[in-house]
Image 1 (spheres, one colour):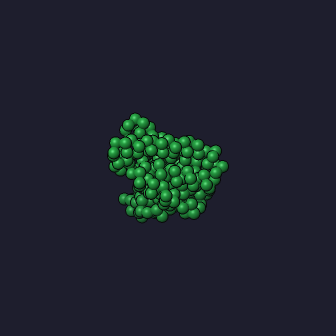
Image 2: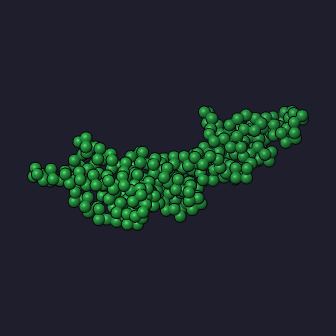
Image 3: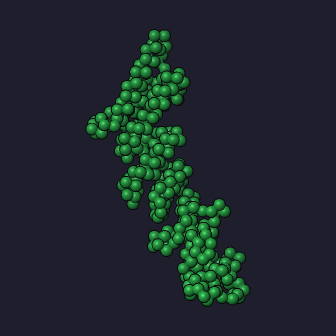
Length: 314
């Protein structure tokens, strides 16, 4: 439904399409085609018909129940090369960047906001959200960063597993994304989740590096005398050592050449950890005390298959 009659037309000195676009957007505007906000589809349709695709998508995105359609329209238009895309919003959160006659649309933030609203509903939802983000064109680093933020924000990094669930992502891109998510998880103190991702993806070198970093921190703490002697922290440290030892054995058995070439730091730290554990057990025994730390639990854990160890999420 339209409002009052239109004012005078556009500048006839410009091309016909440009004049029509200025007439629709500049002279008539939203107050005419979408009076009172009651006809967003009408206004978006007119904008689409006059090839003002960025503005049409922005009009749909401004209406909550039409935001999904805006995302679909935006992705389809971008795929066909019909959309001018800005990678980020302006400070005022407007989706349109730039001025008349040809603004750009901040499509990546629009898609990320939309999928972020439902990505936490489950692993399948998170995986679908990654699919949406992967449809975006533009810098690969930005697309990867949007996926990382999504997975960490919704708490579903396991959506990267199994590989078959994201078969639309090229192998090299998938492994780069997985390594980046694992690195970010480890940086946030979520080493168990990072280790599981790397193990399941058979990223042995990266997993070895992660375990080396964690073991080094534990050994350094022990040398300073700040490593807890008992409790949950001590049990986690013992389990880490057992998990690392189990992985090292499996790696050496399955790919001795790679393990020999890249596993030296891990094997050395495991030897140091074993020496420290033995020294602690001897010191406790000499004083007639039980060994500090869950040695029996460590031995039991070390006997488990690695696939059972790394499903723990911490």
